[in-house]
Image (cartoon, rainbow, N blue to C red; front, side, top):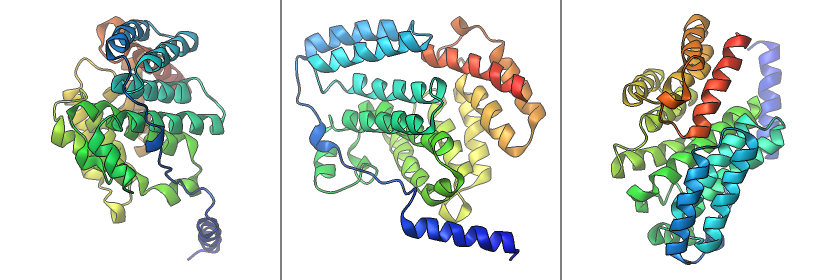
Length: 291
C-alpha cells in the first residue's frame, strides 16, 4: 500500500474511532402532535398549496413554509403539511443556503418533519415508541405515507451529497441502505407514486453505495433509465442525470447536453412542484455554464 494511502487509512480509522462525523438518529415520536381541527386544517392547506404553486424565490418559499405552519397550528397531525414542510426545507438547504452547517440543519429538519408526518400513522408511531428506528418500522407505513418516505430519503441524500466531507461520507454511507428500505416500502404500498422520483432516488442509492453494502452500478443505471421513462413531463430525471450521473462518470458532453435541455425548458410545460421546477431550470443553467 502506498505511503499516502496508508496515512489516509490511519487518519480515517482514527476519525471513525473518535466518533467524529458519525450521523446519529434521535427519536422525535414524543414531539408528534395531537389531532386538531381537521376541517380548518384542510382549508388552510388548500391555501398553502396555492401559495406553494406560485413560489419561485426564497421570499415566496419562506411564505409558503409559514402557510404550512399555520396548517399545523390548526391541525398538528396534517401529514401532507408536515411532509411538504420537509420538502421545502430540502429546497432551501440546497438552493438558497451556502454554509455547510446551515445546509445540514435544513436537511435534518426536513427528515424530522417527514418523521412527524409518518407518526400520524399510529402503528408506525407505536413501533418507534417501542424502540425501533424509522426504517425498522417502515413495515407499518401505508400509501398515504409515501410522500414523507420519499422526502426523508431525498433529505438524507442531499445531506450526504452537500453536507458531508469525504471521511463523513465513508463513515455514514450505510445510511443509504436505510433509504433503500423506505423506497422498498413505497414500492410495496404505492408502486405508481412519484413520477420517476422514487426510481431516481433508488439510482442515487445504488450508485453511491459500495458493492459490499449492496451497491450496484448496473442496477443504479437501470433505475435511472426507469426514472426517465416514468418521469415524462417532469424535469427531475433529466436534470439529475446531467448534474450527477454524467458528471460523476466523467461524461461531460452528455452532462452538457442534458443540462442545456433542462435550462431551455419553459416551466409551464412541466409538472414538478413549481419551486423545484424553477430550481431545476436555474440550476441547470449554472451547472452548464460551469462545465
